[in-house]
Length: 247
Image (cartoon, rainbow, N blue to C red; front, side, top):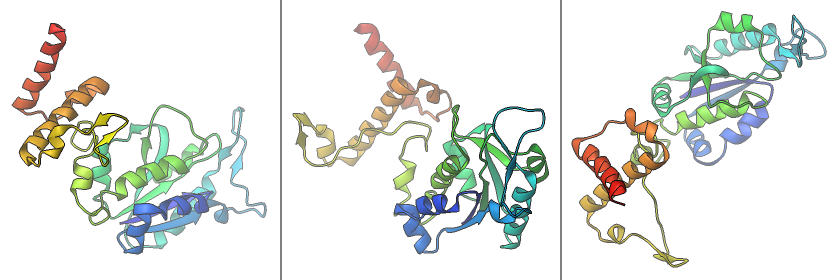
């Protein structure tokens, strides 16, 4: 998979995306990152990429021309047409389902906004998919773009050592993940659940599923509305309600 970042801070993006699992996958040739400095495409000596907004208001707006020329140059860099993404508070909130869909695409391109916004005309021209990572404000589009890129890249075949590394995680199957434990067996007088030491894989899988259901019900009950639940899952959830009533 190829991923392009159109940004005012390419070093920032490169530094993050070259570390850990993503960095190792890049070294193996599974991921291919390209960084484009929007400031290189300005038409003035000062390398200015922003200007005051028409109509007045606080802050500065990124101009259309540098972004668009950067975009056109990035298109020339490969024959593969990219799926373009612009991180925006008006976009749909990013989900694991969308991450799985994006992971199947051969090339993604992130346009990273900054300052108080981006000239609407360049968005109208390029027509990127607009995505939000939540209802809060950040200083620029680099961090949310890298959040989405990281989430997508780890789903690319071969990036993680085994598919179960992500298929059993929170959100992948519509539920939160079950509790995890490692050595030592006892820490601060807290013991690892006995069933995890039993070696009985069927019972362990049953326990993990029920713990996922329990945690999801307690922390994110809204997720249960969309999760694919079996008849046994529904019976277990019902039993949790009955236990509370008895208490």
